[in-house]
Length: 613
Image (cartoon, rainbow, N blue to C red; front, side, top):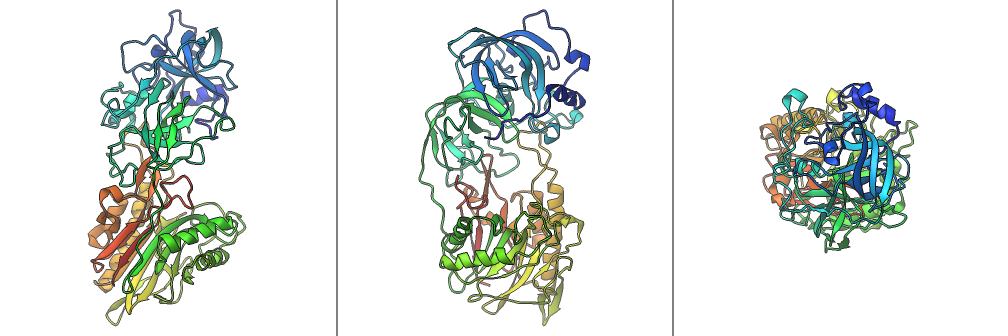
């Protein structure tokens, strides 16, 4: 099981690093300072901000009842003072980092001496909040079998509606120095319970069980509800305060983690310490885990296109390469045929080269595409042909050696591809006017591949298709990832979204190209689609649509149906299809077959648009 916040450096190095990043107050001498003469309680250690007022200091004989023991990953235990103070901003629980397997048991009354620190899961550069802890502990068990402090209930009545305070401009937007207001802000509420014994009642699953044995629930069943049971992330201000990550304390070898899909219920009581980790922030690490009650969610199937409708789809097939199990090819193929109703054109993202992540200079994806199209035919689908432009080795980001690229599949029985001097990885396609109509100089071709916006990123693939005598331009995209962005639970509020800068430039490049097509023919049928890696309300989306050149078709759906991906319990838009003004009437479908389910063929849901050119 993945560690909640893995440590590999020695504690001394951790303290030195924290000093360097300003998390520890005072000097290195203070960190080794004299033991306080006054009895220290856990709430004294936690204080009323995110940073302990005693950080870097030795404490002695801090008393508490052990509420949870973790024997894997970040090994240690949580303890809680049963005699709480009257200040809701001070937590009564704390994590004791033992480094080795703890020798205490739940219900032990203990006295702990050690060094107070602030550990940042993922490192200071991650922007994550820190966990107040006691390290290098000396632990004395006073008695055993004690009743645990009553668990604090987390529910729709206790979690505030507002997500986070605004960060302090004088501290680079950090909320670390702000006094906690747990009755006003959800992040402050959870922080004021850090390390404490908490519980939730029956709650709806909004993030399916993942390979790391964790799932997400919401304690606010009404909050931005998706049509199929998830929780919609519909703006930067609707972070969804009721989301909570669930893990378990028991090692998986002793107790398998339950498999749950979005819309299932985690019934009964789930109780344990409230932790914070780098993979989702505040996490209830269950000592007692509720029971999953399965819902009725099933993968969707879209309607087949009519004879005079062109169906265009986008699907991120998640690093598909010939070394993947045949089962993955078959399942993806079945989805194309049965769930997507065999679209006329499919833009694929994340098709890897012929030997996958083997980094030997191979860039051809001939074997990958042969294997995939054969699987589609075997599943009862059409004999798709494909067009693509091979990337330059290791120049398009993604898994090193994998050379992911976008690919057009098309059904030659329904649509034809207009071949125009196919471009290579470095050649830019352009727009010309032929007999009063727009045309590409290279089809297939890449859009502005030398533009710095595409450095270490996938270049857009443009192609010219003809359906029932009408030309349709399709631009397949896979914009830069969100890697490097801070999470919603970041110490900076609002979180720093550094990856947006590149996607904004990429969107502007694609928008400019579409405007060239429309300048040559204002009635051109243009579709830009793919894994945009950004929300429909983002600056990226607005830049793509600038000047009315494109319309994000997902906005034609009710808000409760706008999502293609589920991340940390938030159902959100990453994959999009955008249309030019000539495409006035269409049917759009975000076909939910992956993102809500524990068993996935990809982590993205495909999108389909049907229209009459």
